[in-house]
Image (cartoon, rainbow over all chains, first blue to last red; front, top):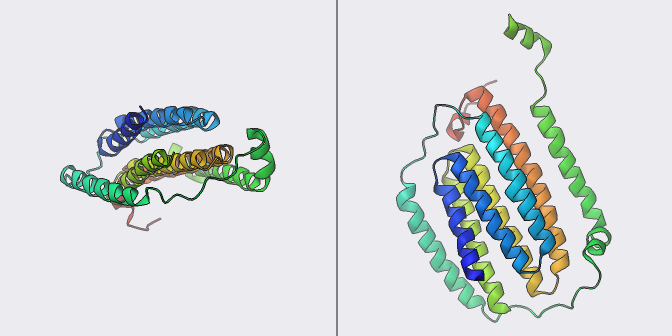
Length: 163
Length: 102
């Protein structure tokens, strides 16, 4: 079951790269996110699963679709047609290297640490209180960047445009 | 448990490889962002799988939530930049961004 979920995740990620239509690519990415969220739930990581499902599969997909709708034009970006031949070769080589490296890693994992104590909230807000401030700063910087990009143009330029 | 971790790490390597391929070869700016998203998916899967194996699942989850939130900020800003570029060049092609004219 877990293996089939991982295969689904990889397949939909490949689809989102290879599909030409951007809308289909965004929807493939959302489907891959849903697979990842199910994997998280099966690994007992409910909080991460909820965030993956609501934020990545929901919000980011909405952002992508909005951006695609706003930038839709007649002119299509021409991707080279070599991908059809190169990507399978690339993926095969990656898969072979992956399997070989992971075989070597078998049995070489360090010892398991001591189990955690406390709840998720305690670990989130007490152990990681300092870097959360930096994270809030990063989000705020993102909001300011979006506001700066979408600010109205200056009055003289707008006046010229209306005339 | 070790084999479970290895299985997940195999998927992580594939996801990061696919994302890097997308970043290196695609010409559409939205596709480049999709590549970044795929790499972020691989990183979050690596966090959770390692946290489960090492008995640190709660800390791994809190880190994953941080990664996801910062990822949203990055994607929102990047999409705003892409829309702004599209207003100037009327295209999503990165090859048209080679001229530094005002």
